[in-house]
Length: 451
Ligand code: PFF
Image: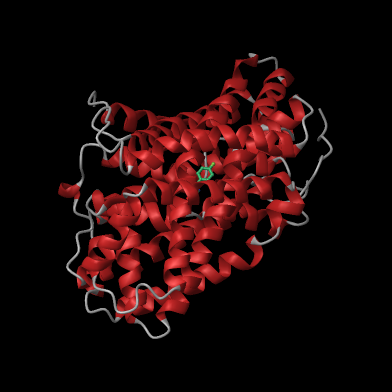
């Protein structure tokens, strides 16, 4: 089969890198990475996370992009036709389905947390945090999250904005905006790290984040670190695959992947370097959980000159980072609905979005009135987060790796991913065929107590 024509595509390589980085860089880097690193003891967790990004994330991202670029359809149909092309079972399409369901579940809570960032834009701009103490900032956050109406309103607003952008379509909606937001976010993070350096506890924060102490790892820490690598790089659910399906023919997948992975990792580490010193300087605990950045950053902004301005700007940028990720969470479903059912993107968004919104109510109430409802010791939010990031994404990612590594025709793969005849190519094949799938398998066995 010759290369399929592209139905819609990014205008340039840079546009793709920005959009894919936009998907990767989001709440996962700035909200989630610091709090789960805090809950899992810091340095050793971060080290395992970095190893997972390099040995599992990077090769799988290349595989996921190449599948999309070869199939040129939504993940479900891409998997179906690629399997058909080589006479493999059509059941491979369930990889696409797994991704659609995972994206849908992730977006249901992602939207709630992104709503918090919008609320904090408002609070910051009203100057509510000027000179605030850590304790008072904690109280503001607790009062906010225990009021379901607030969470509900912001969840609704965020979901509406996401759907509006997705309904505008690929180059109209997805591409614009990411161009300025990412560099601006980077600069503001640097500013925060600069502040943290002078907070008096930079060394302590730095050591917490980078000095590995394996005795601090919890039972599930390795699984969570691996899940975070998938989550942060947007892997295993078809988001990167669908973005790859819009890739112009001549663009290098390998080089783009490295850019995206490095940018994503740098932003997460910078967020950690900004936040942990603030925690220690204010005698807070790194184990504060999902409220971590909402209880620490206001203290920092409250103390710095023009803090209300920078704080507002920061939460605005975080909102945009979340938005450029949320659109990729729903894109696989919308692409599938519009291509299979010949629906307008608008209609597809309305259907997928309202279901997601409804599912998000579980998260909204799990922070307050349903806080005591638990399965396996986890609230609804915690359970959805755990199952999607640590189970569904790794399974999806491994299936993609196995498909590209073992099922697809080797020449086809190498034509999409030309890595030369040297070490890079050999390394990729070993990683995608053996190392990535085996590592995920071993981590699963370890987490389930078998190993
Ligand atoms: N990578 C995003 C983040 O770190 O916030 C979240 C995400 C987006 C996960 C898209 C998965 C995905 F497919």
